[in-house]
Image 1 (cartoon, rainbow, N blue to C red):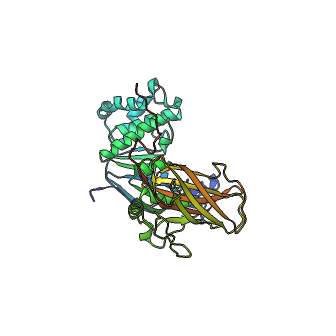
Image 2 (tube, rainbow, N blue to C red; image 1 turned 120 degrees about the horizontal axis):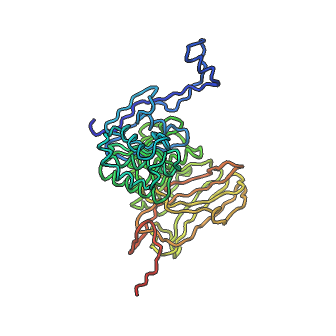
Image 3 (tube, rainbow, N blue to C red; image 1 turned 120 degrees about the vertical axis):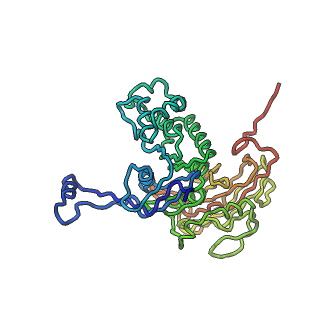
Length: 436
């Protein structure tokens, strides 16, 4: 299809791991009948289709195959099985310093990188001033690359990658290096690229950036694609993977199901609905999401939750500037050394806006016994801008050095902030203005 920028079909990558150098030699020479190596599957049967103009994020734990799939797409690595089709000129920012000759100075490396991507000297000449201005590393551009700091590397590499007008931009974690001003400049360039209809493939551990810039997200784990969908849905699933609470869905359709319906329901502030509970009883909670995500060991269980306004009335709508409280009741089925009770507020795109917990607030640092019930309330002033938000609740703790999730409820309640004055950004700083 003409609108497909990148098509990854059943791609696998297997590495041979040898215990000692002599085993590698024996294998290369075909000596002996037995295998002298063990196989490591970096990727297993990965499928991915990226359309032109999309910004697609790839997330996963370390060793999940994110960098490997990018290197295969860019041609740095050859897949062991499967095939990759790319329609368009790729500019890639992979590992720090990749494509740089350490003995060359910055100018020479600009021409080296541009030539490797497929540009002529004349085309690079025309872009040189833009590249130098974006990188902004001063006279260091005339020094050998081996004298550069990691920040200088990424500034120059990103300046080359993004200013030579590629059709497809691939970025692998590089923006975690560099100061906040440079990162802001890079993300501004991302916005420009999206408006121009360019294709972007973005790997990052910065989930806020993934949520903000990506149209769709692919989740990898140990070389396998767990799913793909909206940023919010995949980030929530990724958090389950991180704490060992991920349970594979029953069907492929369910695995790839997007959550647009969930967003629409949350935005409408569903009233008096119920979720799947063991008792299957109506909770009658205002603004409750009937399709929330929950998981945990259930050593502690959140059995009740609601929001009250400044008059103590249960509601899902809070007036901006007023006091409100988030309430939760938790039952303990086992003794827990020091449970942590928490809440998080996200926007409908899945970006975490604010939140806190009892450990951060130093509000509760005690142990609890089996059978105990705790009622927790977080009271604060509503300074978020007017709009719809999603509330998540959790009970976690540490068992030795291991972080454990006892019960989490993602996007359990819709919160509508009612406002007659919205400033710039996510929240209002309540500025006092004086004009003389």
